[in-house]
Length: 172
Length: 148
Image 1 (cartoon, each protein chain N blue to C red):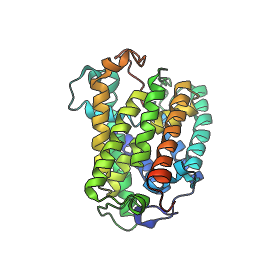
Image 2 (image 1 turned 60 degrees about the vertical axis):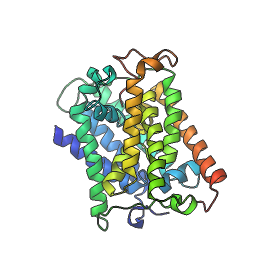
Image 3 (image 1 turned 45 degrees about the horizontal axis):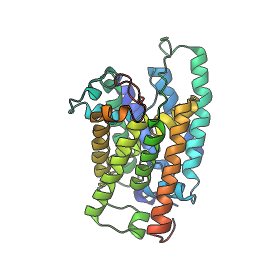
């Protein structure tokens, strides 16, 4: 199986895993920060929303490091595209196009709904794949184990329903 | 330090982009049990990070000699309920929060809608926090659900 991005072959999983661990440990050892991306969503919200939740010290004090980290993620994706055949806007979604086949407007609606669940869910859970799944599990934190089991189970259930029941066409 | 965070984010984003972690098909393959890739990545990342954190905590000091401080996440029912809601979103969008940004960087236009949804979702949770606080046993507002 290849990536949607220029049909590239993916990095070996072990290499990618070691690389992610390296970034996580560098963040802790060099800067005393625990990896976590989803709080960055709150940091962005705090730029415009006045609710007391977004005026907490924990949110405001994290903006100085989380926002550059988030900017780096965009830049990393951009460089990845530039260095592998060029950057160009695309609507391609691979399996989704073959099995569900919605056009641009449908994709935007689908993605917005998915995003709602992601933003609300991660902030209710207190973390996402990085903060709970990588850092929390690696630091043997019980809340992270609960959250990781929950999001993996819900992800499996949802995809099974979407691609084995609702749109059962061509497994990847 | 800003440059360090930008650099680490860039490396992280590049790895997510090239590994399949920011790829709709690989995420569905993980949840369909037809692709091992993401399970391998997460397992290796956790198994290498765990002893690393242990060593850094045993050393007790960061590179610059400051005491290592890791804020632990609080335990509450939101861990499970929120986790389940996030799982639905991860499956639908084929992206978790980091890869949303990576996909935007790659030029995948639809990821902009995922980001918009995620910001509205986070905004709703934050704005309605007092409503969910009691039924879900969430920590005081000052503490929040956990950073990360």
